[in-house]
Image 1 (cartoon, rainbow, N blue to C red):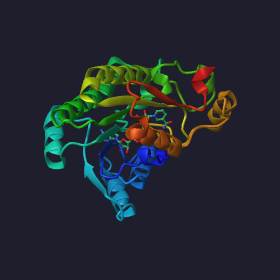
Image 2 (cartoon, rainbow, N blue to C red; image 1 turned 45 degrees about the horizontal axis):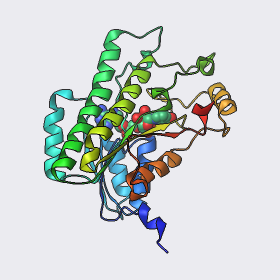
Image 3 (cartoon, protein in one colour; image 1 turned 30 degrees about the horizontal axis):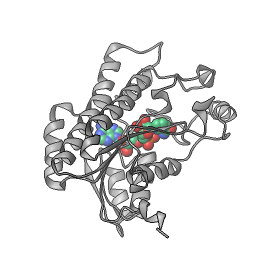
Length: 270
Ligand SMILES: NC(=O)c1ccc[n+]([C@@H]2O[C@H](COP(=O)([O-])OP(=O)(O)OC[C@H]3O[C@@H](n4cnc5c(N)ncnc54)[C@H](O)[C@@H]3O)[C@@H](O)[C@H]2O)c1
C-alpha cells in the first residue's frame, strides 16, 4: 500500500516565508522544518529573525531582513532576493504590514490617507511580490505552491456586537485588503494553473494572540463573545493554521488551487 504520509513531506523543497517572524509565521516555519523543507524567512523584525536563527540552528533555516512596505525599492529588492536565493518551490506570505496609525482604521476615525497607505504597503506590495514569484516559478518551470493569507474578514463582515464596550474596534481597511488578496489568489490560480502552479489563500478566523497594532492581548469580553458564537467554542491556535499551510504547500493538496481555505472553527458557516 502507498504511504500517504509521504505526500506531506517537504524534503528537498525550498520555502520562502514572508512574515515568518509573526504569530502564525513562526508556526508555519516549524511545520515546514519538521516536514524537511529548507526554510528562508523574510521579515523586517531583525530581533525576532535572529532569535529564530538560534532556535532553529539545527535545521535548514535562514533569516533575512526584508521590508515589504518600501514600494519604491520593492522590484529591486525582489530581484536581488531571487538572484541570491534562486527560485522557491513554496512561497508563503503571512506578513502583516500596517502603518503606525492602523488602529484608526475604524468607521469613526478612518481617513483616505490611512486607507491608501495600508492598501499600498499590504495589498499592493504583497500582490506584486506574489506575481513576481509566480513569474519566476513559470520561467524556471517549477510547479510551485503559493499561499497567501486572507481572513474570514475578506469574505464576511465583522460582527459589531463583539467589540461593544471593549478596547477593540472593527476595521474598515482590513476588509478591503483581505477581499483583494482572496480574489487575487483566484486570478493567479486561474492564470498560472496551466504552468502547474497552485495558488491558495488561507483564511483564518480568530486566532488566540495579540491585537494587531497594539501591545495588548484580546479583550476578555471579546474572547467570551467570540467563543460563544463559534461552533467549536474557542479561538484557533496558530499551530492549527500552520497545519493547513503545510497541507497546501505539500503534494497532499496537489489538486487544490484557487481556494479560500477556511480555518475558523466553523465561524463562517452560521
Ligand atoms: N492572528 C489572527 O487572528 C489572524 C486571523 C486572520 C488572518 N490573519 C492573517 O494571518 C497573517 C499573519 O498574521 P499574524 O497574526 O501572524 O501577524 P503578526 O503581526 O503576528 O506577524 C506578521 C509578521 O509580518 C512582519 N511584517 C510586518 N510588516 C512587515 C513589512 N513591512 N515587511 C516585512 N515583514 C513585515 C512582522 O514583523 C511579523 O513578523 C496576516 O496576513 C493576518 O492578516 C491573522
